[in-house]
Amino acid sequence: MSEREALEALFRADRELRALEARLLSTPEARLVALLTDAVREARALDDRREAAMRLERLADLCAQVPGPEMADALVEILDDEDPSVRGAAADALLDVASERWAEVARAIERRLEADRPGPALEELPYLIAEIAPDGATRLLRRFLAHPDGEVVASALEACGELGDPGLLDAVERLRGDARTVRLLEGIDADAHDGTPATVGELAAEVIDALRPRAGVGRHNPTR
Image (cartoon, rainbow, N blue to C red; front, top):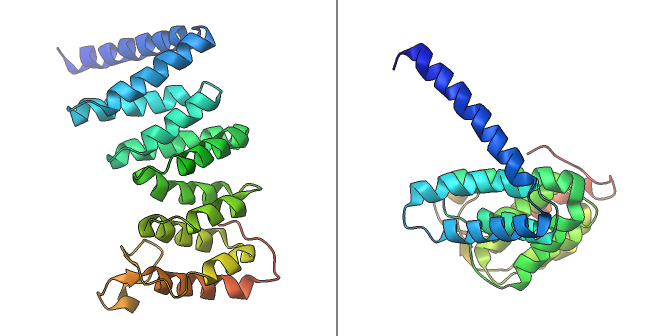
């Protein structure tokens, strides 16, 4: 096959893909939701991680186009995958959904918290909340700050610093003496810790310093 033939084949495949997606999305909603929910579960169970990642990235895009709580839950489930590229696709999809249907995403986040099940999603969701910065962000982040997993709390602390809402100061200050050790996160100054593990309390102190100058100034919505 020549380069030109390969290009034409790629165009044909793209047209076929779009037609198949349109046909799939025209399926009656209840059947489509069940189909996609099952597909997410099956993909997550695959031993072939390359195949699983391919399917989950595609499913993230499809689930984002279908309204309803089941699809929001499916996106959070995809966000729980160990593959960074899959989590990135799920986060982008959740951001798209949240921009139009924040209540669906918020309830899915709450259900994930209530499930009390460990996984990467709980460490990713605080950043998503901070990036969207909706009404209710402070309430949700407080729940993450109170989580028993120190890594989840560390993610929530960094998200609090990014959100910049001084209304979170009291919740963050309660963590000042927390001795649990955690990974250093992207917003934390690793040099300041001289190569030693950071504690939740140390991270809390840094976030407190960041939030205090903003107290009384109003809410800050950063770009992450």
